[in-house]
Image 1 (tube, rainbow, N blue to C red):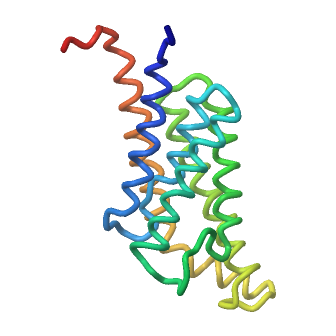
Image 2: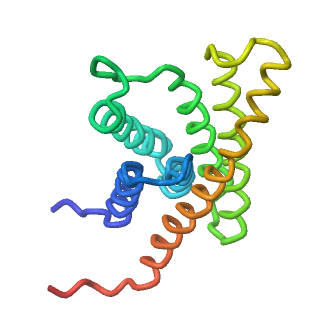
Length: 183
């Protein structure tokens, strides 16, 4: 008989739930993606699972958003321009969760969420500057890109803090009550 690891299933379900909250209308950049990366990195002890599950969840939600909700592109879009910058920051945040959150405390989750939101902000906005046609490829263009992105950081930071609190909080609270479920 196969033993089902309910913690593993719970982690996956929380990540999937978070990824699909992206379709709910929200303030700019107030999304769960950074928290999903931290959470997956912190709780999925197998390093392959820690990367594959959150990244596939992000990618699948991107497919739905880009092809069925926004319909921004003329054809089915597997990857949007500049996706590599978002996914690279996502991978770094997974590493933060994997290495920095071995022992979960409120303070560690808070500090790692803030640091991760800054990593996301820097990498993705650098990517906007480096690959886009919006800003000139000069130091002034880079500075303009970062300065004009500052108002969007509020949503990024709040999203990291809210969704990290939710994901880590729900999972930690679920570990407090280990009584079997009665049906």
